[in-house]
Image (tube, rainbow, N blue to C red; front, side):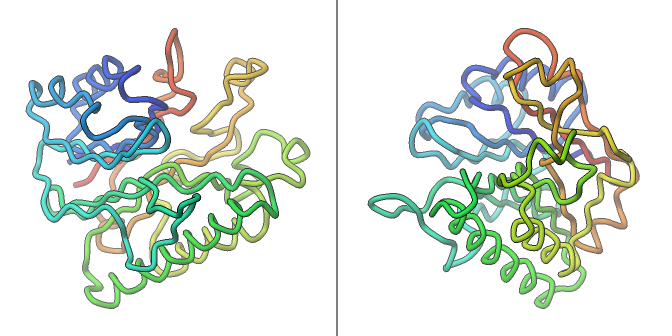
Length: 263
């Protein structure tokens, strides 16, 4: 079974890339972030034609998450907790999480809040969001230690210094602050392993490169896209890789897909 996660930065603009990626790599489940569209705008038809089911949560041109599966799509949820934080004026449940059971695996597509700036209300929201996720993730394993769960997506956190091209360039900024890193590692400590890193060692291994200042050709990126997996699922991972080729060419997303192979 092959599971992938990808922040596509507008699914309508990149549906041809999405379908090409699915076909080229024979992907069973794709978790998508930043769909940037409403439910009625999602390009479902192209995926239906390929034999994929789609679950999407989007309310406007911002955020948005989806799951695309050809191995089932059961028990869809658009929040991971009753206390998942709200944001905005008025406050709403932003479309940042969608989960479903696909081929026996509980797959979550997560788009963690960016945080904007350290000290910004959005930064506090980000930390609260991650803490709510941690509590839920802990409870899932308490309920079933053998649960097969993967928390995939754009985490907007670079958990170690090796996960950014130059720590000096990020000093004082979000994504690398100690509270964000602590929040990320707290979920790992609950039993969810970063199953990609053993197969994609760093430094210099990234999943995101800003469009500005030729970051991609200069290899100035960040590793912020992850698949944190429960112990039972982690034991099934026999390969993982980052598809840098999808960051190349006209119309590419600023993120590359991350792929897991399960036995």
